[in-house]
Image (cartoon, rainbow, N blue to C red; front, top):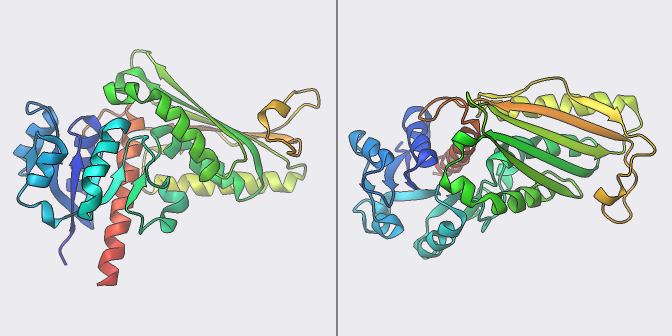
Length: 315
C-alpha cells in the first residue's frame, strides 16, 4: 500500500528536521515536497540532494508543483502570521494542515492527550514546544484531581531559538496558556518562556507547577503514577523526553496568598504538584540541545502518521 504524501512549508531548522524524520522514521507518510522562500537555504539544498521536489516560491510555488494533487497533508513550519496566509490559500484545495506555528486556527492537538478527538479536523494546531512538553503533564494531573491553576516554564537554549521562534514569543505565551486550560484541563493557566544564553547550550528544561485540592495522601500516589504513565506515553514518540527527578507534592502553607491565581469561587488548593522535565533532541538534523524543536517535529509527525494510518485502515 502506498504511503500518504506530505509537503512541508518552511525550509528552516524545523522544516528540515521534520523532512529528515519523515524520510528516516515514518511508516505511513512520505515526502512530497519541501517549500521555502530562500533558494539558497540549506534545507532546500538538502532536499534536492535527497531527491525531494522543492520550490522557493512559497505556498504559491507548492500549488504549482506538478505533484501537488498527490499531496494530502501539508505541514506549516513558518510563522503564525505566515500560516494565516498559507491556510487561506490551501483551505479550498482540500489539504489537511498540521500547523507547527502558534497561529492556532485549528484545534490544539497534543498527541498523547487528544489526537483521537481531532483526526478529522482540516487544520490541526501543534500548540508550541513548551506546550507539547508540559500540557501532557497538566492533563495527567487533571485526570486524577481538578487542577485549580497550572503554570509552565519552558527554558530553551537561546542558540536554538531562530527568527521564527523569537518573532512568535507573544503568540507562544498566549497559545500555550490557552491550551493549558483547553487541553490540559486546568481551570486557569499561565505560560513563561526563557531563552537561556548559557554556553555550552543547555538542554530544554520544562517545569510544571499545579495547584490542586488533594488532602488525601493516597491521591498523591495516583498523581505520581499518572504523571509517570504520561511521560512514558510522550517518550514513545519523543525518545528524549524524561523526568529529571521524582514528582514533588508539597502542602500549600495556610498563609500563602494563592487566591489571585484562581478563578472566582475556586476551592482553595491544599497542595502544589511540581514536575521537572528535560527534552533532548534526537539529532536527526538539529543538535541535541534543540529539544524544543525536536519535540515539535516529533509531535507533528506523530499526528500525520495517525491520520495516514486511519486513512489506510478505512480503505
